[in-house]
Each structure stands twice: as structure tokens, then as C-alpha cells.
Image (tube, rainbow, N blue to C red; front, side, top):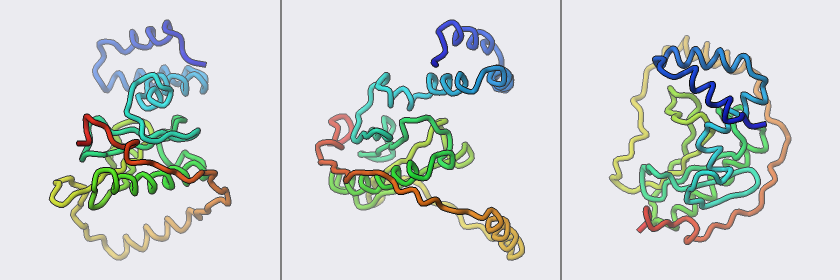
Length: 206
């Protein structure tokens, strides 16, 4: 059940005037006192992508189904930059069920092909970040589909690092000990057909 305006106003009042570090600590105290369903409701009420999914914030949608929505990024790396996200609120991709994570990348792949055709891209990047250190700027799972062009100066490169052999062996062993298994769930997805007109937008795509 969504939080009332009175509850939201009270939370805002508790945070007002505090420095960022204190705001974060106070927010954690407030969240610890709320039932899990109210915590989830508050996250959804404050998350811009949950609001877009609910149709409460306007966006240039290029794809939508019962599980996912894709919109043009309003601050694109390149023309035709698409953001694809689950309608349900997840902060990290590893919190998503297998069938939903499978579908999001199936749709991302279709959108990548559509971007090639719609904006004449010479390549695409399909990019997902989990955590601030990885470049995640919103507390919602986002898959970026970025059309690429020669000499476009979009930087996704990194400097290779030298890792000692013993460290590599230790890391490999720790990962194997996690005993990763993949469920047998099959994603339910229809063939995604995206026409050129659906992905174009006059403000971004000439």
C-alpha cells in the first residue's frame, strides 16, 4: 500500500537540514521501523523509473510488455540511446527471477537490432551496472542499449590490470565454491517487432 502524503511529509521533515551522511543514517533508521511492504512502496514512490513504468512521468516509449518498458534516454550517450527496465522495482539485476532476467536481455537484443536499422548505427553496446562503483546512477535495474558510431567518443574502455597468478587462482576458487546453478525456467516472450517509426523521436533522432 503506498505511503500517504502525511507519511512522506514526515519523512521529509526528519531529513530536512541534515548533511548527506546524516540523511543516509536517518533514512536507514526510518526504513528499519517500517514494515517491508511500506519500504517497497516508498521506494517505488520515489523511484523515477517506477513512476515512468506507471505512466506518471512522461517518456518516449519504444517498447512495452507486461514485464518491461523501454524509453529513449533524455540524456543520451548517442542518438537512439535506449533504456530498458523492469516495471517491478529491483535495485540489482541479481534480485530478478531467472525468467525476467532472461527476457530483459532477449528484448535488449531485439532493441539492439532495431537501433542498427533506425539510426544507422555501426555498432551497439548493451550495458548494465550493479552498484554505484560500477556506474549505477539510479536505484533501479537499467539496461542501456547505446548505438555506436565511428569516432563517437563514447567511452566504455578500461585500462587492463595485472593480477597475480595466486590471486587469480584464489578468486577462481571462491567463485567455483558459490556453486552457481541456472534454473530451468523458460522465459515467456513473444517475438518483438519494432518498426523504425517506434524508435525514432523528433527531438533526438533526425
